View (tube, rainbow, N blue to C red):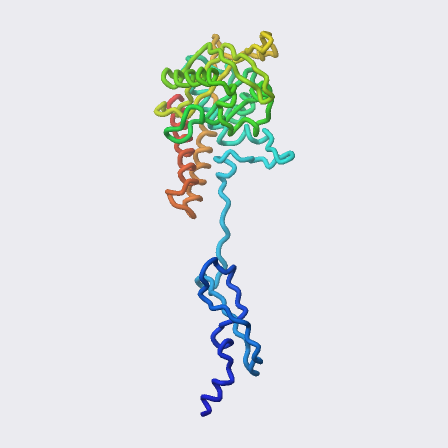
Length: 332
């Protein structure tokens, strides 16, 4: 009798949770697993405390979990702003054209040009610290795009570099051009695009193309005819694989037929005279860059696996730097 009396004092809806105000997120559409009923109006028994049920967090030892680390690849490999300089939400070219990945790319651009064309892009000697500024401020227009995934269409290649003269000619900022399909440099006309497609395919087959002429268009819609351009394959230091293509030229013709040239502002484009070009990069700096990338790879592997995209990208850069170092060691 006593047991029956105690149980009768506990409202069934309070004891078993039916109609209780426990919220576990929005009720799904369709059939509900909890029958609908009006909240209980029975008085709460005295000396009973409401019980709050919460799912226990999975955390061994009661220690706080580690915060997710931010990879340095966000600044080095993903072509995002590295200098933190922004204006009205648009990344400026400051810090972009001097980033580590751009420097390593330009080393391959210069080396590939010499091997493919048989000329030197520069006659003067300068170190790896200067190559970014030298090419960015050079008296010629230079652009490049890098190949993407295997099977990527010709018109899907994206710009990964443009120097100051190129940005001025196309009337845009670094962020407006770099990362965009290189096919956007030509008019949205099938004849123009087909001509450009043929140029790129010929370059890929032959290794380089000289004296090219073709119509291009600036970001403001102004047409100009590129004249005497040289396009070449940018390859790894070993020459085993093509990574992309680069183009250089100094003259163009505007829509009115007026010929214009950046060479008029001073400076030679090709160093193909008797002057001997020096080393573009010194061994000590190349070794430092290899070690820096190796440390980055080890740091990533501490939290990620070899199958993660960031690790794969970092390893690719490391291999490119090692190949560049080996080439310098062999040359010396």
